[in-house]
Image (cartoon, each protein chain N blue to C red):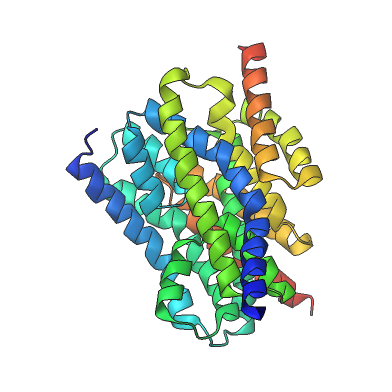
Length: 230
Length: 109
């Protein structure tokens, strides 16, 4: 009996927490599917990428690189750099995971995204969260992402290119995710430092390497400023 | 529908390079304590990455990149920021941003 109550609480806790993430994925996923369709991808190819990569920003960037005729190596390298930020999210989550079975860790790692990270890390910090609830957040978001992108892939053939402001989906997503991160002055300082140095670097350096350089530099500067005041 | 073999290899490669940074820290760091400065640095990384992704998308135009402050992307970003702050809703912000961009694109062009 006790077990049953815990389990039902587990699923509803997880789904409740992932609700806003899932709802957010619908318009972004559809927009991605439509853009991919315009770039010549069929819904299966779109779904395969959503399943294997499951990282929205890098999928948008990859599709634009595919349609610009970029080579395999440069597409994969750019994906690596853009998604390297998960390394840091994964490290930060690891402090709450303790020693777990391999299977759960492998499954949990797959679902780490900007959005699931934001939800899970704040729940873990509150102390009323565990790996099973976190897994439900990750996998419901994953299923919603795959379904929305495939739906967009089918809808794309009925939607003219550049309509409904779809080209702005990614930027609007970045804006909202950034707002979620701005929890104090030091975060604003870091984001602004990263943004300004990224703009300057992007004018100098070809490709997308400016993203990782500016991020590492800005976060380092943030830690320095934070500790200098002590 | 056919899926090309080359496409499969590229997407598999993308999947692998995306999965490893997600897996390695939780796999190797779980249960260990990290130095304080490193945790502080990790805590600032998401804000840094998002800043580095966002600002160039607002004020530079693509290949070859040039700095242009008055772009439609930048103008739409201002109300979109307000909606994000007020609603804290990812879906609501994305729909507002797309809607305003669509509308202003029609009005100005």
